Image (cartoon, rainbow, N blue to C red; front, side):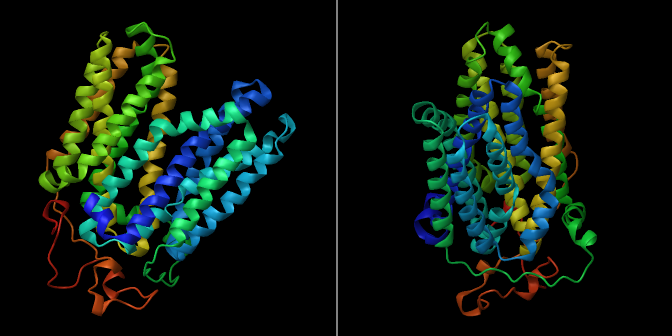
Length: 434
C-alpha cells in the first residue's frame, strides 16, 4: 500500500482528497445534529438531520446511472466545489427560523456521499493489480479519521460556534475539490445511450446477478448487515445491563471499534493476496463472530477485545467486495453496479437497525448477540459450501501499455461487453499479478 502511494502520484492526490473529505464529512455530520438540537431543544430535530443524511441513499440507482453517463472527475470537482459554497450558507443560521438551512446542507451531504463517482473513477485511474491495495488503504484511512473527526467537529462547534463549523466544512470540501481536480487521468468514454431508461437503470442489478462471485459476495454482505445492524441498539443494552457502565461508554466502544477497523483495513490487502477473496471474507466473518461472542461477557477487558475484533473483521469483508466490483465490472458499469450493491447493503442495514430498536425491549441483548453470531457464521458458510469460479478481470484504461494507451476520453473496445479479449489470462483476486 505504501509503495502504491510512493510510486503513483495521481493516486496519491486522489487518496489525499479522499482523506480530507472523509475527515470533513464525518466531522460535520454529528455537529449538524448537535446544532439542530441546540437551536430547538428537540431530539427529533437532531434525528431529522441524520434522516436527511441517509434519505439520498434511496436515489443511489439514479446517481449510479448519472455516474456512468458522464465523466467522473469533472462531476466530482463540481460536486465538491458546489458543496463548499452551499456549506457557507450555514453562516446565515441565527436561530430556529433558519433550521431549514441545516437540513438542506445535510441533504446535500447525503447526495454527495451516496454518489458512486469516486469508486468509478478509481477504475480508470488504477491498474487492476493495484485495486486491492488501494481499497485497503482508502478504507483504513476512512475508518482512521472517523476515530477523531466527529469529536473534532463537535469540539469546533462547541468552542467557536456554527460559523467556525461552516468554515471548517467549506475548507475541507474545497481542499478535496482542488486535490481531485489536480489528478491526471484518462477516463473511459461514456457509452452512448442505446437502451431505455428503465433498462439502463436496472443494468447494475442484472450485472450483479449474472456474475456469480459478485452476486454471492454481495448476498453474503447483505445478509450479514441484515443481522449486524442490531448491534447499534444491542450495544447500549450490553454497556448498561452487562457492564454496568453509563451510556457514554458507547463512545469509548465506538472509538476502539474504529481503531480495529483501521488496523483491519491496513492488513486486509495482504490477506487477500494470500487467501483470496472467499478466504479473506471468511476470515473477516470469523473475526466478527469471535468478537460478538466476547461482547456477551460482563468483563470490560473481554468486551473491548470483542469490540476490537468486530471492528477489525468488517474491513476484510468490505475490501473484498469493493475490490471485486472494481476488478470484475466494466468501467462504464461501475456507477450502476456500485449503486446496486450500496442500495442492497443500506436497505438491509436500515431494516436491521429498525428491528433492533423494536426488539430490544422484548429480547435480552444476549439473545440479539447470539442471533447476530449465527447470521455471521451462516454468511461464511454460504461462501464455502460451493466453489465459486473467479471471473475474468475487466481491464481498466490504466492497464493499457503506454504506447497503446487510448486517447483521452476513449474507451478500449474490450470494456464494452465486460469481457477480456480472447487469450487474456483469467485473474481472480487470489491470482493477481504482482
